[in-house]
Image (cartoon, rainbow, N blue to C red; front, side, top):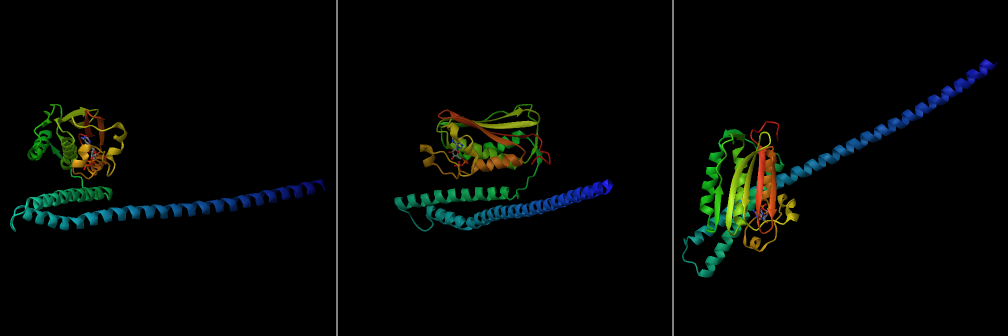
Length: 287
Ligand code: ADP
């Protein structure tokens, strides 16, 4: 009798435990379904985000591409007018055409920068690496800037490339684009003094290019944001200059593509040093 009681009791406990397990299993299944639904939702959101980014890049690429033709036409016509192909211009007309030319050139620069940015964002920039000598890169840059050195109070100095700087294995055109941007900014924001381009080895397998100027400098609060899209620092000089505010953000992205980074040191009123540090040899998986 006592045995039968114990059996029934055990049986009851077992059933209760089984019911509890069943309930837990049901709960677990429900949680699992919830997690799966959340994952699916997350996937959809990620998809939307990817599509939105893709759409933005495509829009930028199309827009900047389509803008090139009309801008080109405006610039050609302005040049014809300036060359007096259709007769003389009054002084006032010449001023106005010059104004059109300046603005169209600025517009064209902005479109080019936007197109480059869109390409980088869409991952459509081809990196083409090859071995090249630093001296060749510097002499090409020197040649490029010679015609635009119009301020007699500023000298552009390319320091001698140190002997321990080996040949580089990277995309020389991307590197040149970054340096061109640093140098043309430095020339724009340096009313007098010098702009000095130098190279040094830093750390293991890295090389740093610095463009130091004795210009107006940049206040500390802008040191981080200056590399973001469309950032420009208000100054009396800025008002008289053209620019898009895209050059530095493009430089930063290009430096990343080359497996490196950009940096700024600057003191207001004293000058700025923009630098880019990249691996001497770009490995295939660095980007
Ligand atoms: P842009 O020169 O077309 O305006 P950038 O992205 O190249 O665009 O530069 C952004 C801003 O950073 C400039 O407008 C200027 O305010 C500031 N800047 C860049 N380089 C210098 C420099 N060497 N000295 C002082 N300010 C600079």
